[in-house]
Length: 445
Image 1 (cartoon, rainbow, N blue to C red):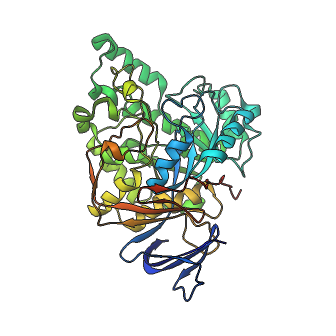
Image 2: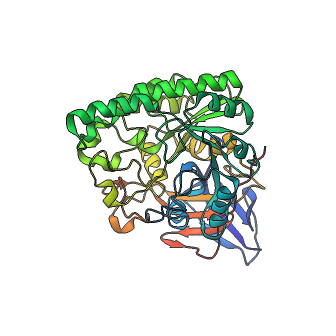
Image 3: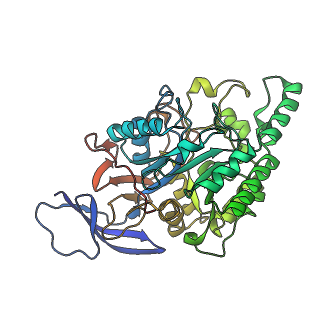
């Protein structure tokens, strides 16, 4: 059995930072605290001055496989993820074909078992006509049901209200939703096209995919969840107004309705469109500085429960097109944790709160077994970080298959030096373990 002792680390776990050791035996954490004598065959890593975090759990990524592998693959993007300190990911169903049957969902699990550098699960995609298949989803093996209530691909827009209520009423599984009102968006888009044609200024993106579109859809989904008793998780909030729909007066474990915010909505605002153009075109759109500040406030006061990436790569050629043809989304997993660590350098976010939102809370919210914490008996998904090792994001350092990043040219003051996945040192200062693979996540439901 492989053994590794991480010594003298500043361990961040459950709201505390303490200096200590972590002993890894095989896939698991064997001891936490002050570890005494170890066997001669134990590998020792002196982490003096570095911080040890639980591995980040990213609850929303698009790794594009199958069918869109010119943009990304599970292998390429999970490799970038572990370099960024993400040890587990939950991937979305809007691939080609879409994961809207149990067979197609299983096909994705089989790809990941052979190629994923990080631990993995997938969401089953709901449509207007696949309720029977949806109800076959195994809650112990599948992260959640994903519903697009706007901005869908293929036939995944669930816009039949009777079907939507039936889904909410029929499943005990967590339902994760993309909330933007498609009617409002299409009306706004038609008005803009009437003036500009296809060459709509990117600055109008948050006007087209507006606050009204987001709030209308989110409030409807929440009302339906309250009516039916469904367990609802609202992805990527982008407006301050939406944060008013959520509560912070009960523990996360007791919440039936939860929320997520993404790194790009915390980092960028509409003032960046002039510089970044369609490379920061996301759905929902990046909005005003006031919205960004409101999202930070809601995150820090626990109305928002999770920070995720919504990693969604497209090629440079695709993103360089005019507004109506440039797809929404961008690559983030390699730099998501680094960006949030930057917020700790600026005093916006504490290290303890960062770990809560990126590691602990996704594990609690999705009821993931034995991950998200630095505890004896838990899987050794761990990340060592040097907070005093500045680096510039250069093109040759980018690991995404698409070959670009919205953070290119940015300076981060921290470095992820080691990433352990199930006790295996999967990443160490630019080098990867290409022999081991991640595990399928399981859920305590």
